[in-house]
Amino acid sequence: MSGIDKKLTDKESGSLTKGKKKQKKEDAWRPVGPRDPFAMLDSLPEKKQQEIQKALHLFSLGPTLPKTMQQAIRHNYRFWETQPVPRLGDNITTHGPIIAEGEGSFRKEPYSLPSDFCWDVLDLRSAPVLRELCSLLNENYMEDDDNTIRFDFSLEYIQWALQPPNCLAQWHLGVRVESNKKLVGFIAAVPADLRIYETEKRVVQVTFLCVHKKLRLKRMSPVLIQELTRRVNQQGLCQAVYTAGIVLPTPLSSCRHWHRPLNTRKLMELNYPGLRQSMNLQRALKFNRLPEVTKTRGLRPMTKQDAPGIHSLLQTSLCNFHLSPLFSLQEVEHWLLPRENVIDTYVVEGEDGMLTDVVSFYSNTFKVLNHPVHTGLRAAHLLYVASTATELVDLMEDTLVIAKAKGFDIFSALDVMDNKRFLENLKFSISDRNVHYYLYNWKCPNMSPDKVGLVLPI
Ligand SMILES: CC(C)(COP(=O)(O)OP(=O)(O)OC[C@H]1O[C@@H](n2cnc3c(N)ncnc32)[C@H](O)[C@@H]1OP(=O)(O)O)[C@@H](O)C(=O)NCCC(=O)NCCS
Image 1: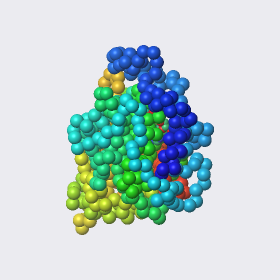
Image 2: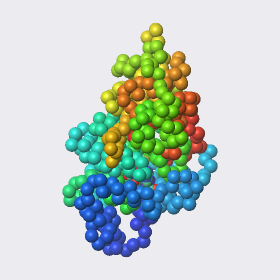
Image 3: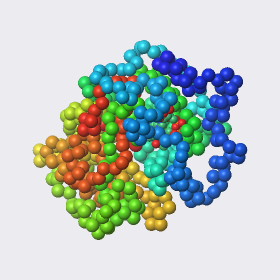
Image 4: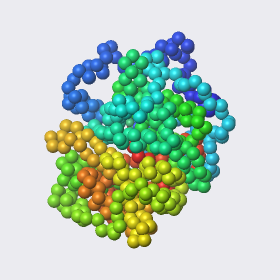
């Protein structure tokens, strides 16, 4: 990677003289303007700040990242063009790394930050550190464009998402302000074994890239990504998988979110995007009505003893896809064993005691801003489902019944795996939110969503 490192340093900093370069670096992430506009903004009441943010979103003339392939073709990817990822428009027919192992020597020193900032490894076993990370994410990891709902990650959720077996602390990477140690940037990687077509690879899953709102568009992300890459390379891993809603070079697969209302009345009151606008409340309630109880015999919550059975069900089912995780038993336990308000998993046990089906969903909570009645929203997201005895559509209908009974307002699923077999049947509607899958330092032909067998929770 050293060649790439150098190219990137040259490209990212241009041909400035040393003095100017230093000055520029030091000023790089400073807010601009004669008076500190952020201090002015901070002095306003929270409600006023939100109104201003909403207006800025609506009328923003600032640069936005490509959401479609057409926009992507015209975009100048200053950073991504320097990285070992396939070029947009390339028709890839081969399989393998872009930079072969051993071809580049890895950089030993950390990437440098502007002088007011420092790197910090976040120790997620510490509750105060976890709380800081939650605050950064909850205040800055915005979900919608008009800022009416925000993520409300819990400490338990972050622990689940970022501390699977064999996770490494140095891959929970933060950027802090040197003077007051405020956390302003974060990125994480967790290890995973993947099957990519016929190749089995130890990779990292990269998630939770987040930069404080006040430091946006200052190119902190490329530095976070490079420093994380360096730390991953140090452990001998050279590939990563990640997802994003924007188009970067180059999607391996482009999938869609689908939503199924569970609490129709509340979603209508919230004007939740994607609901069938043409329906009045009565019709929508009738349309989305679900059975009161589940109908699959033997359906029950997963226990620790079910891990081996689930492991073999998933192994068999996931090998039908071109991109899928190769879970260890410990990983099945970590990712699927129920944790309240984090992850739910149900199994179907046949009369002979064998497990025949499994379905799991994780939970995202949101804060609703400025609504007279509602303050929060709970979404369930399908993680994995594998069925050998129960019809997929019946198992999923029961899953919706369970999620509704557990107080979730909406159920989401991607159109990956065999999910298309139940999405329309069970009255999910397609949203305009894409999830693009990417591989770092690996090229292979792209694949349709139904060949993707991997879900990365956020
Ligand atoms: C995503 C986020 C960190 C980008 O920060 P930013 O200040 O807009 O962008 P920066 O100036 O730091 O960096 C820009 C570079 O990062 C890249 N980038 C932006 N978002 C990215 C993403 N999600 N994944 C990978 N690269 C990304 C851009 O393409 C650009 O590189 P380019 O010149 O090659 O096009 C920031 O918008 C954020 O924190 N958003 C909320 C959380 C979020 O959506 N995270 C991503 C989830 S997938």
